[in-house]
Image (cartoon, rainbow, N blue to C red; front, side, top):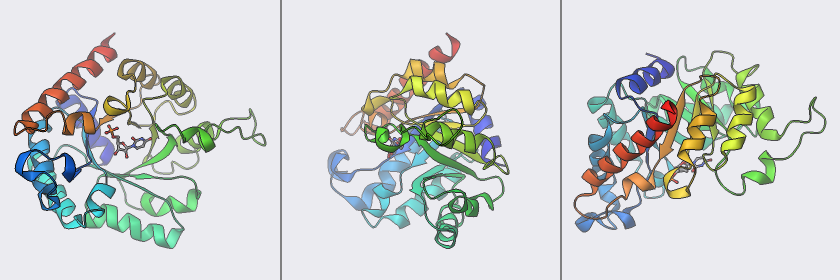
Length: 275
Ligand SMILES: O=c1ccn([C@@H]2O[C@H](COP(=O)(O)O)[C@@H](O)[C@H]2O)c(=O)[nH]1
């Protein structure tokens, strides 16, 4: 099954646009686990077990594992997700971007070592930095387009005066991803929920691409405005929330609290989609 098939299937089966982000930070773990990086797998597996019937995807962020020398725990977690929720796609948030020969190694890491269904990439180094990922048939690749952080303005909001219509850089990325770069239909875009009006601008040039949208929850993005903007054009929608779900409680009830937070977030997104 391709990434897109899995995404459609999980979105329908779980009636969900929600992606639970797996950003394990040991200092925020509950009780006896607190501060213990050897518990990263146990913590994340408990979150996965509590939420896999509520989501359309999971998104482990690789830095939270690598910073703690916990890549082995990420491998174990990927295998766990495959076992308990084989229909739920996993997007490895790695934001890679490098020359072709190095990109080949990063693609191998994401798709062969970790078995991810999709990966996040920086488009800054151009098309040849993306092509190694597209050689993996059926896998997804999400290009950073209009990110949720304040510094996203520094480059992404700049006008490209030499191009027809003087688009912003993020609009140009969206146009390339919808058109000439999307050779096998594997591309999607990362756009932040902190800027719903700009999601509308992205949808104007990339109506059918899957959008991976972080920024609701801890970053305060407007979930309702985000869904309304993202559904224009009909492309698949993935709304990520990490900390607001992972750390809904720092007590022994953390997994139940994560489930309750996921149920509430999914309901907000469902209501927005139906309004
Ligand atoms: O523009 C972007 C791109 C990626 N992210 C990532 O998403 C999650 C957000 O976590 P929250 O706790 O829900 O704020 C995190 O892994 C980021 O690296 C992003 O926030 N914005």
